[in-house]
Image 1 (spheres, one colour):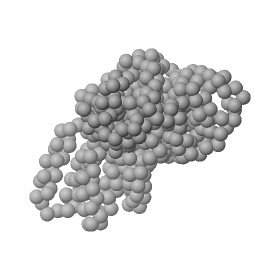
Image 2: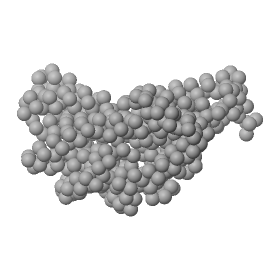
Image 3: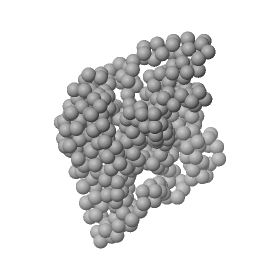
Image 4: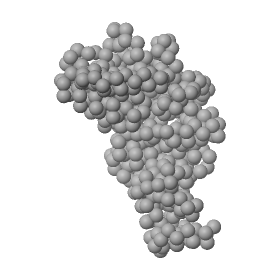
Length: 454
C-alpha cells in the first residue's frame, strides 16, 4: 500500500503524459495511478479502464498483464468483487505466463486464491498458496513470501488447522517488517484470526491490538476489513462496547464480500448485546449479499446465527433445520467454526434438541439434505414465520418497525437506506409490506398510526 503523496505524484505525471503524443507512456502512467489507488476501487477503476483500452489497442502485452493484475487486486482489496477478481486474475495469469512475467503471474494467482477462499473452495486456495510460497521462496520474492503466508494462515484457520496457520504467519513477520506497517498489520490480522479459530482469546486480543497499532492515520482509513479482526477479538474477550464500535466502523466502510464479513460480526455482537432485531437484520442482509456473490465461506456462520435467533423466537423445527444445513455445508466445504464460538453453539443446539425431543433428528436431517443454494433460500423464506400474525401492528418484522420509526422521524427512503444499510428500493419494498399489513395507503397515514402506537 502506498501513501497518498505517491498517488499525488503519479497524478502529476499523468497530467504531463496527457500532453505528449505517446499512447504507451500514457498507458504506463494510467496503470501506475490505478495500481496506487487499488484500495479505492471507485478511484482506481477509471485509470485502469483507460489504461486497458490503450494497452489493448497498441498490443502491449506486458502492460496488459500489469493492468489485469491491478484490476484483480482492486477487486480483492478495494471493492470485494469476486467475479471481477476471477475474470481479471485468470486473464492476467494466463498472459503473464505466456510472456514469462512471473511477478505478475504470482500476483494474479494470489488474487485468485483469495477469491477461491471466499467462494468456499478452501482446498483450492490452500493448494494455490502453498505452490506460490514455494515459488516465491525459490525466487526470493519478498512481497509474495509474506502475502502468500498471511493468506495461507487465514485459509488454514478456516479449515481447522489454526496452529499450522499461526506457524506459517510467524514465518512472514520479519519480511513484513521490511516492507512496512501495512504489511505487518496484514500478518498480525492473520494471527488474530488463527487465534480465534484455536479458541485462544488472549492471543487474539494481542494480535488484534498489534494490527490496530500499525493502522494509524491514512492506513486505517484505507485498510479493508480483512485486516480488521478487532470486532471479533473484542467480542471473544467480552468487551461488548468495543466490539460494537469496531463492528459499526467496519460496516460503515466495507464493500463487497468485506461487507458480508463485517455484517456477520456485527450480528454476533448484537446477539451478545441482546439485540435480536439488529442481529437478524445484519445476519439476513449478510446472507443475501453472500448469496448474490457466492461468498460461501460465511454461509455456515450466518445460518447458525439465524438458527439461534429462530430458536429464541420459539420456532424450534426451523432452528434445527438451519443448524443441520450449516453442519452439512461445513462438511462439504471444509470450513470450520472458530472455537471461540463453540460453547454458545453447543448450548443452542442442545437447547433446540431438548425443545424438539424426537423430532430434532428428522428436522436436522431435512436441513442437512439441502444444497447451499437451497439452504440459503430456505433461510430467506423463513423470515416472518416466527409466530407473528399475518396482519396488524404485531405482524411487523424488526426491519419493518425500524423503517416505520425512521419514516416517523421524517426521513426519505434514501436516508432510511443509509441508516439501515439497505437500498432505497428495499426500503420501498418494506414500506409496501407495512402498508398491506396495516391496511394503509400513504406515508402520512403511516406516520399517524405510528404516533398513535407510540
